[in-house]
Length: 380
Image (tube, rainbow, N blue to C red; front, side):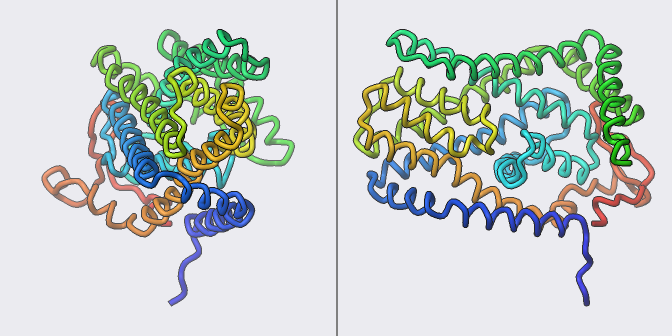
């Protein structure tokens, strides 16, 4: 029997090709990373990998806490950790300024019949928490560089851009909180502009008015949920966000220690925060090519021997960039192969659907039984 060609299958083939292309293009760097890791103290390298595992699990807990803060039914924490790894893979295999990283969460939400709008808010809050907590450590790192007279102009400029990006995200959420109609007007203006550009190529508008209205309605429902449960519901996501930064600092500390270098707190925070700044703000996916150079430069300027800075950077990027990228590909394969099984796990109980003629639709306002409609995404 001939297999059916679906959009999901085509996407899988394209991402598989991108995965193979990335490994082939950077095979020299990967070989260097493997050689360097073999030179480190094995149990300290293993400790760094263990901390990385805790960081990935904590990312799942962070997403789950944001879902719960919005009173949304979260996926299983294990699945959220897989989704985080998938975003790390997809954002490199299909770079689009970070937009592609949201797609796995949207697909997972559609599979569970969860409204897409609140899921976008989950990822918006995640980005705000990530940029804000990273900004705290970045301030400490830049302050350390300033005090030792080693602060560079490009570090300041990128930090300002990150601050503006974080402020824009917070501002958008604040407008939605205080004046959703104003946000709707802004989105409609953007929709008209993008629709006019799309019309030049005879394509439909990517942001039609009805979609904007639906998104604003779901956004308002999500914000109302936060109002009802109170600001204290965000305390847990904030703690997980700070814990994530601390765990990432631990990875760099153990990697450096495995090569005989014990980084002081100032050097550790400065190296990590500036590296993460260029991880976010550079045009290449994951800061590939930029982060390596800036890490070596910063550590060398902080009295770390040049050879040690090189091997620490290669090992650190191997564990924090390439390992999640590779694991993310296998997590993506796992999700595709076990999709039917996951759908069965999320099937509503018979007591909620006794006649078998409806599905359960989850949204911020609760669980509502709706007539069953054909789902093209599920059929694919």
